[in-house]
Image (cartoon, rainbow, N blue to C red):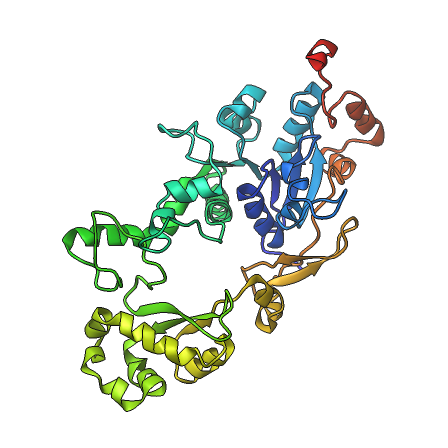
Amino acid sequence: MNQALAGIRILDMTHVQAGPSCSQLMGFLGADVIKLEPPTGDVTRGQLRDVESADSLYFTMLNCNKRSITVNLKNPEGKEVFTGLLTECDVVMENFGPGVLERLGFGWERVHEINPRIVMASVKGFGSAGPYADYKAYENVAQAMGGSMSTTGDPDGAPFVTGAQIGDSGTGVHLMAGILAALLQREKTGRGQFVECAMMDCVMNLARVKFRDHQRVARGPLAEYSRQEFADFTPRAGNDSGGGQLGNAIPCKPGGPNDWIYVVVQEHVWNALATRVGGEDFAADPRFADIASRRANQGEVWRRLGEFAAEYTKWEMRDILNELNVPCGPIMSTADLVDDEHVRLREMVVEVPHPERGDFLNVGCPIKLSDSPPEIRRSPLLGEHTDELLSEILGYDQGRIDEARAAGAFTRTPRPAAAAAD
């Protein structure tokens, strides 16, 4: 079946998570993703390894639907191979530190000169310009500096990072949007362009509603927050919904770490919910007569719901609340999710075979297309497709491949003896 991005060839030089999560999604959608790695490989191949001598889950779960080629970009033959690949690709992706590609001779101006139609996509922690441009960034650094951590956690506690990788994989989704937009524009102009996503910028975009509240708090208290002490910034709100409707996490039996359910109390479901939880007296209590009074007394609302939920599991509560059309969701652990019928039905957890580590679970493609459902293929072994790609894309015969290999195009350049002894 013809995939949505079939015919798009991506030269992916990115490593770790932000870039690879983007190129993997595009690979799921049919793009031919060539993972160009240094001879030592993507660093995550060996990080957090759980099976000896096999690629780690950190690598395999972010690099499905790709082919791997190793190229030494410090070697003249390797640079020739890289230049040839640039002429045959639609997109080149990178997430090196500032100035690295320029020192190798492949900054944007040079890449655009080699192939005027190519889209160059770059992930940086803080972008290529500005006072923070040279700072190093990781997932949690981006969350800290993008506004997420300051608004996440208990009001009286420390700021928290989110379990979702909004700095890395969140940036990857933004980058994919930018790449696709640039490819669409190329259809009109015939020219590629430079696409950049900074992790800090993307976290700020995902924290947009917190900047909404930052402006509102200057005009008075935010009634939807359970705590009503405010400074001049958006506070941490615990599990408050932070939206137009009240919401919070309610503990259930038997009281384990994930035996909770999140409940949203909409205006039009209040009477049915209150009657089910506490009878007609609770539903008729003037302290909860409308949303304004429920906001003012929401501590008591959550206490009463908690007393009720203490008699039921989160799954039983889900069924009770859904019968009342109350929006709710059990707090689902990773163990809950990998075995969930709904998740499996939607192919959001899939089993992928691997020649070295055996089967592993991967998160599926969240983008569902009716005419081209994705087929998820395992991640490549280091350099597994080097000869195949050189022959298929650059037209190298075996003799030319052997010559390039002998010249060090695909292997690590040894240090001079004197340097090695230092």
